[in-house]
Length: 206
Image 1 (cartoon, rainbow, N blue to C red):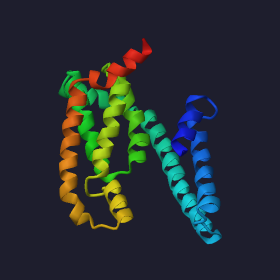
Image 2 (cartoon, rainbow, N blue to C red):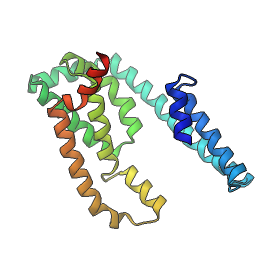
Image 3 (cartoon, rainbow, N blue to C red):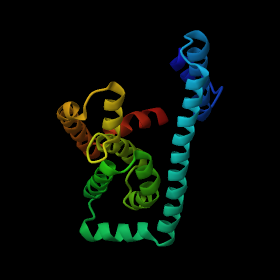
């Protein structure tokens, strides 16, 4: 029922995606407390405490990223990065591969939201200079960070999922390697063939 409420509300214009998150939280709270009766006051306070801590962490990351982005712009780091890349190659595909390789490495030891907020203001001017489609890069970036999230040393997604399921990361890691290998192949295909990402948006725009 929740997907119907969320998607229906967003697509019909009743509420925005941000408001949809609030509606989902209230709906889940009503189900847990009143319908299934699995949520008591103690659990409710614990949920609020954990939510506040997680929200504070995100706000801190956003604030730090905004400050870092301003410093990067003030110091003309995007221009310096563009010049550095031009000294290596002028081929758009090679530039895109180099940037994605950087994102892949960063994703292995940084939080996804931190990579997006800190690196995007630096990377976007470079992409625009070389005429690289931002939608194309955005999809590749998300796949990149998904791979990084399951790859040591940080492997946030891997550690979180194994903790929730109660299994050891040692048992999971060999299987994750195969998943990451397939995702890397998919990433290369997306980078080399932009229409795998851009075909549907172009059709909808026309």
